[in-house]
Length: 123
Image (tube, rainbow, N blue to C red):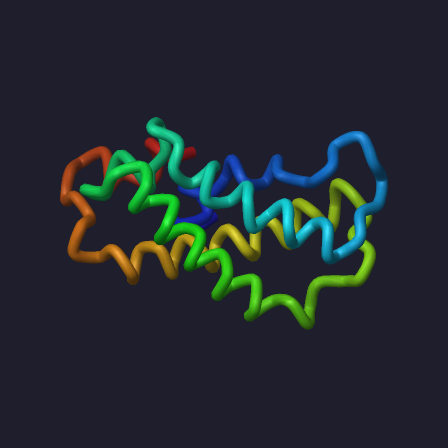
């Protein structure tokens, strides 16, 4: 597992909806577009603790990154996602992509602190 995967490990549990075995692509993408910025920007998450940004700015940057990455993967995501396998796989792909895009967008706001530079803290 690489550094960004450690940071995004909580996204592995995002496979929507938990009570269903299948979800259509459109519904899944809508849910992820809403959920990823919220997950990224919780006060105890890397994307808030390690960047000098408000919750609002964090969610704005995370939403933008999510939209860009959703476009990148839209043609690859199956029309029907079988849960939890497909949701976990594509949620991880999307989360990793959005995490990288977020970091690039806010690189000047990133804190250089031990906690932010230690991937094991974000496992």
